[in-house]
Amino acid sequence: MANTKHKVTDFLTREVWEIDTSPLGRFKTFLVQTVRLLYVAVREFTEGHLTLRAMSLVYTTLLSIVPVLAISFSVLKAFGVHNEIVAPVLAKFLEPMGAKGAEITTRIIGFVENMKVGVLGSIGLGMLFYTVVSVIQKVEKSFNAIWGIKKPRTLARRFSDYVSVMIIGPVLMFTAIGLTASFTSHAVVQKIIAIEPFGTLFFYTVKFTPFFIVCAAFTFLYIFIPNTKVHFKSAVVGGLFAGVMWQGAGMAFARFTVTSAKYAAIYSGFAILVMFMIWLYVSWLILLVGCQLAYYHQYPHFLYAKKDVLDHSNRLRERIAFLIMYFIGYNYYHDREHWNLHSLVNHLKLPVDLVDEVLTVLEKNSLVIETGEDPPSYLPARDIGTITLNELLNAVRLAGGSTAALDRHVVSVPEVEGIMHSLDAALSDSLGKKTVRDVVINEG
Image (cartoon, rainbow, N blue to C red; front, side, top):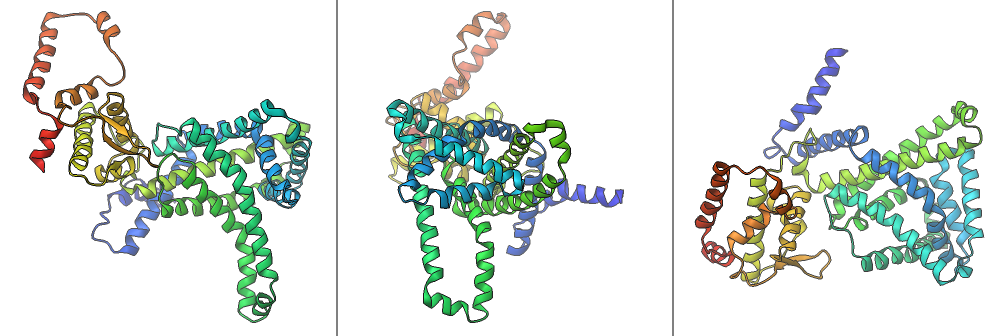
């Protein structure tokens, strides 16, 4: 038994990562990539920063669940279907909690119904929307951290994107449910259902529809929330994984709830709150792990058995800065398609956070600028004939703020100071007055 366990562990942590997939066929490559993805998913469940972010989101959810539902409730109330959609969706989410879930649903819906959005006034309504935007912003920060994105949406985009989803989302849900009901009740459809095997197929389709809706919801979040371009296929992979895990966790949690009488004995009236928080934590953790899986599916070259396998040296940052400036300058000079973060990451085969970090440094030093596109592309901030290689190198070497205050406190040794001056002079002389334009033309 111990020998088998050792072999499995060795295979998952070493052998599967040493397989060269280039000569393999599609199916075998798919199996290897799937095993790697599943291993990473389990690893993210058991360790890493996702658990801490999930805990943080539980607290945020407790504070914002009523305002978030109040917005959706108010929109659907105009169609007279607020009780037919909000309550069932919430009940489905809390279904693994059994009778306690039904009780929590009733209480939350009661709070929402007592919140009269129309009498809040302009300040109260503004605070309501601010609460809704804040909770989605917290989720965006977690997703951006997974994708290595340090720049959140601008304030204007947050309100426009978030609020539009909160208002349009319920309307689309109501429309989809209405169209589905109309379609299934149509006379022609009923006649088709009466014919086998269409009837059986329709039965299983209806049975598995809630699962597909959950997967679609996860997929939508993975595409919409991160402030970067997420491939639809990668989002679907993360959504399917999260959907399966959420359904499985729901069944396991339902059994746990039935046998959790000791929690009621220990926590008394707070037992229902404790169970609610545990289920929120599990749900958020599954959502974040699915997002992590979508990231690794989109960038499979970043899949490693160990998390901290990449070492970002200063020399690597300098090299990346020259490469990025060359690519941006070359395409701009030759009037080609502009580079964005996603295309640079794929071309350089480097982690998103490292490329984004260097781009941020170049932007702060007025070497590149963002366009107004979504996602933004990058252009030279000025004529590439005026951007010297020395300026580019110094921007990366001195990144992180001014060191003047520290320099004054560092012990000065003449011999060491001489070495530093010699290094600076050698670099400056080597690069001379060459500019980015010189490099672009020479390589063109």
